[in-house]
Image 1 (cartoon, rainbow, N blue to C red):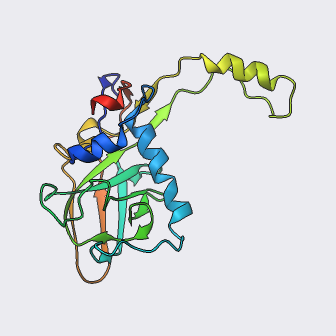
Image 2 (image 1 turned 180 degrees about the vertical axis):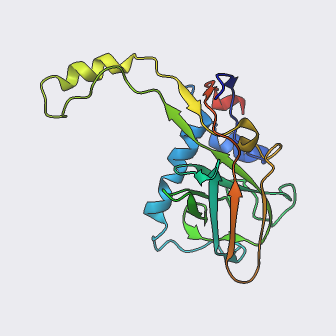
Length: 211
């Protein structure tokens, strides 16, 4: 259980997508927080009636399970990064076909493309994992209708609470992750992975404009 500082950067492989995503003034944030915000859309938009783009490749069901020291890895963000990210018409993470998901209590995740359509394009992928935990507040939260709620909100607004990664740093980048998978063009792709040892490494906030 280390105490080392790390700077987690999502492996967005397409420069133009970086510019589109971060072409505004943002506060300094941690990338895992941004990813959790994006993945939150899976449960909401996954059942929507949004039409698939005409040029989207066929999607194939993908179910993955992750364990850490033999125990289910719950609440982790999972991204599939196409190993052929520099080529055209692949399922790369470039803002178009981004296969990703969020593990449940059993460490299992159903992959969605663009947080909307179930499955991922066939091909070989690197698997990027992130999971963070934030220090609890020193102030107990009162009920929202309590007269003490506004005072609590003011107290916690300026409170410094560090964020820690509980997955080893190597899994947070497509350049270093040892996890790979090939999504098959027929049937469901299912696989179980071991995601290293349990750690506690402080996440250093980064400015997303520098990604």
